[in-house]
Length: 349
Image (cartoon, rainbow, N blue to C red; front, side):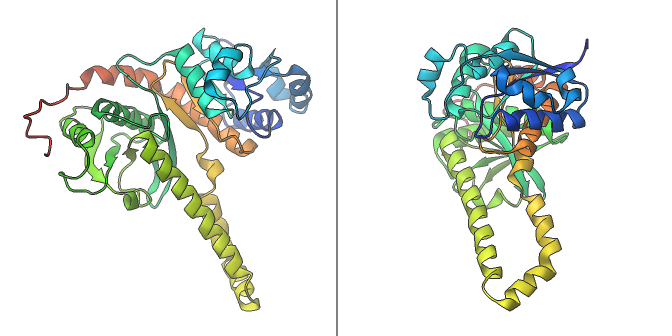
């Protein structure tokens, strides 16, 4: 077992836990067999599930934890009363070196609060950010922050750009990812002072990324850049808007094809194409958001996902660990230049 990567799993987090967690671990085991699992949760519920998959059972250690963080628990309450919860114990396993990464589908706020308190932030990182990837016309893009920081200054945005580019290199395999700042226009003079200052610093950054300037909301889906950087308020609104739009068109298509006999015949003829479209935009395929900037790798799975989505979250965690994501960030942060002075010509007024 020496030299094998160990992944800690919060077995009690998520709408369909622990069944979904164990089944997802089995799917992930088939993709990445060189992994051990440290599973935290109710052993009486987990053991019968593991019995279905002997190969998974042989590489899994179950740590019984009687408590679980409720989906609607406030982060402050979870911090005070969740010391013996499956989520907290899984994070502790990363902090003390028993596991390389932690994956949870539990309460997002609690996971962020616990992760930040237990794991701390990487050197040079002021605030962790939530990052994930999603489909575009060119493939996949990374976007951050998706809700961890409602207000950000220029330093935060520059740090997000560096971490986002490292995430794209680790998960998407891009050697020189392009980075764009989400703004109200593409012109240099657009936007508030913080975003213009961040742009000025990114233009002179000597790191393995290419800054493409400002992008607008309609550039996200086209895949104009590989990494979209914004504050958590804007990022979360953009993400939820995209999800809502996708659901709207999906429902609209279903209603349209049920509207008449000819429409139903048209659907039967186009069904193979729609199956491809559904697979391409399946949210489970893009499941697995990471809290970038923590000293340990912490991946958040969507709480309502199934075993396929959870397996993908585990695979994101695996890629980040194997590719040395945190080591890349630590190497690149010292290269960040100080913010330009008030009289700098690089910052548009």
